[in-house]
Length: 630
View 1 (cartoon, one colour):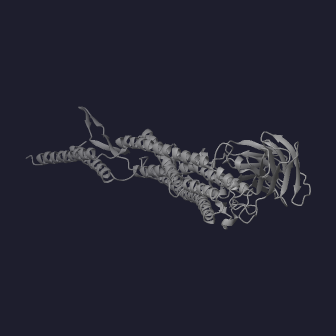
View 2 (view 1 turned 180 degrees about the horizontal axis):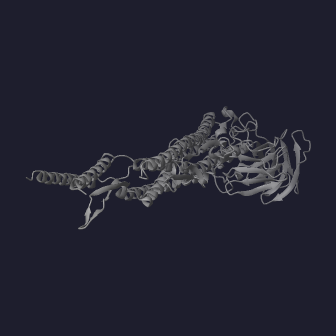
């Protein structure tokens, strides 16, 4: 081996190393770039009788400084960070909406009940009545606005899922293409690794991982197989498999992610299968927070509307008419599953808003029996041959024509707040008065008392009814002196002795004397009576939701739950971002470009190049000396 060749090998090796160092330095700011090293080895020795003489150096390969374990840790950390950030971005918006102390629902509820109390204080004042209607309209409007906001968030999530699926498919196709390019490049180069292509592939995988947490399996030959969910393949070798964003078969208003079988059948993937990435974050937010918050607002609107309507129908307005409904309320929504083969339909209505939960329900038919399943805990709350079922404050009726395996999803409260509206515009129609007036006879000598209450479906007495105590019992006559027979009674209770007349219950108490009389009549003209307004005002603190919560309690519980969860997600996100930063630092400490280190290498390989050139110069000088010998 000549000294010229040894020097030349050193020049080539140094030049290769300088090229790699320059490549590292020029890509120090390139996302996903992994530092490369030139692997130099001895060219071996040549055997002579005097021993083995070295033949210089050769460049074996250019290798990425890559740590699979650290890269895997970074991927896991980044996908968790992306998930929590997406969750926090969404839930913080709801938190801001519900916690608004100026224009939010809580202050409007307070103003409404204050206005109701104002009518109880001054039932004959038209301006006060109008103020109550204005407050009721503001409350109904805020409930509708909240429902609209929640619906917009649902639609925003649908749009984001569609966009994310498009990105997932694009990244999957790019990874498959890079797999093929890497295979071809490696084969062309005699098995040498195409480092920059591998970096590009790792960077695409990292971006995909931020959208949806994926599992990467490296195959023999260096190809990546990428899986999502419970093992659904996105990339296998040079083949990419697309996901689809489709309308859920059980709820067409909801976008879900599906994969396609070779025969074209679309299989919906459960939301819980997606862990990590922005997709995992928004799906968890939707199932854990948004649905519950939307249903909670709907339940509150139904409880307010139904309880006020029921009480308002037990009062009398300024014109002497019995009160009607004050609020229009939303109705349950029913969706038939797209896979249903029968022609049956299902209808649902609110039977008792006080008993409602915030869950959705599924009605299933097995060919003989129905089962109504509460989806929040998968408990069967009603079953049988039907066709009507009552449970949790809802009434469900199944129509004929349903086939075995058919199912329907029922959403009693999800969109109920969107239907909340004030039905009364005339302040005179506010039924503030009690519909029945009772009076004690002026000449009574005893200490007897009388009070009246009404039930739904009651009728006002056609004329006044006079009750006279004969020392033992009561007799009743109308204004014309004709006897009146009660529908029920006497019933002796803790409050006294009661009689019922067409839904009007009259209760006599105290100690009357023989001859004492009492009058029961319509309260028409009782413009200053506040009997029903007081009952309406008491609804503020009545346990109208599941018998344990008032309207304010239920809303405060919702605000507290969302606020606590928002804070928890914020803390978790901050903590996870710190973990991600540490993982990135650890990975970059191995694979990242350190400019100080590269500068040292640059000087080192420069000196190596110069030294090799000097070897060639010496060889040339020696050769000249030999040539010049005379």
